[in-house]
Image (cartoon, rainbow, N blue to C red; front, top):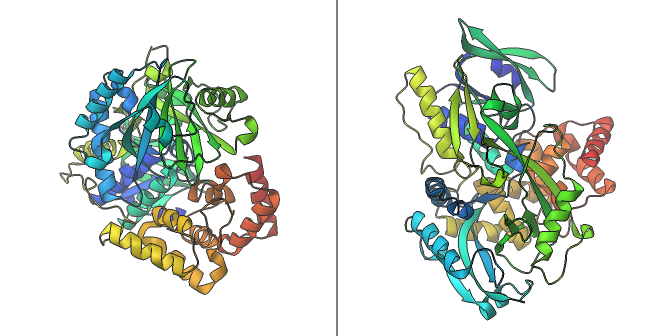
Length: 521
């Protein structure tokens, strides 16, 4: 993956996609596979906003059944099943526990009905993906860290998990391989119109500070929160802030879906890279789009709700990391943000520019197909979508289970511990061979960066050399999420910056500046 700003001004594109999150990545990939000439630009790093601040789930959205949003759930469950099949390295099954207490807002019978409907809407999901009921003793044995006072039993059901930032990165890589021009740190500064219709845009290279005119027959804005904050976008959509905390690991490899005692909202405890994600919140947002921060009251809310269930309470000192993101939702007059529909729609302005509004990471592929269908109709192109049931760019061609065993065996032979090997496979898929070659040249690069987390130096070096990272926080937040999974001392940041300095082309002043930026963030 190589960044080349100069390629943007050399031709007329069929499609310019503005915004390098999950919707922009899927749109560019889909359009490039259909044979369109495509440019994708992102003002920051790939997935640097909402698309790296999700709950890391590929799921149908069990809670949407309460609002009878069956269409949304069925659509998302179909995408979940497809992604599990075509991207087993990128999307993997995750079971969830749902306890039922004497004072639970949703009782056993209602929950049973909901989970049965969830399985039904998934359309024959297979025996490993259906729900199961447990009595109080069996459920307490499965989740021994939960309080048992008033516990009546519980259920488990299945959904799926991903690394959201790497999902976006892989799709950008696929778009590049299909012929798209993809440039991060490239800011849209204006639209160009000819006879009242968009015919291109002006963009600015955020690194070289030069500008270019990009000629394009069609333009799609997948800029998320920046669309919502524009004068036109405010009438279409609204912003909702969600916060997650990174907490110590719990003794389980299953997640939990829980109900907040104070307001009845659903929240999660989810294992991720050996830690626990706790989230999320729901609140209207109208603040600074470039500095979405986690507030003390949001930390207190999540800890308080979690501690209603935990035998051993978490405190603020247990918080390892945190992050906040903004969801874009269709404009609604409903009082509670959590009750606003997460469904998606495409708006087209009078000048012909298209705007993607709302949506979910799970169903972004299908929504992007609708975007490209609209673009193709405008261009008079009849080519059909090629992303459905298509194997992911980094997925191995061989039988996945057999390939996984072979890759894990090779990893351990090179000195990589088993847990790091598992996550390496999930992060890089068939590109893991490139990590192995780094280790063969330097066996010390098989060591973990931080003893408690499954990331090795060879992984970091590969990301620095081949994945279009520009800054240290690109590497340590999105290529591998160390900045939120560990409290990194300045000495550790310096060691990591110096490790990748040659690959990144940094001198000593650059290293110092990159370290300071990471410390601030």
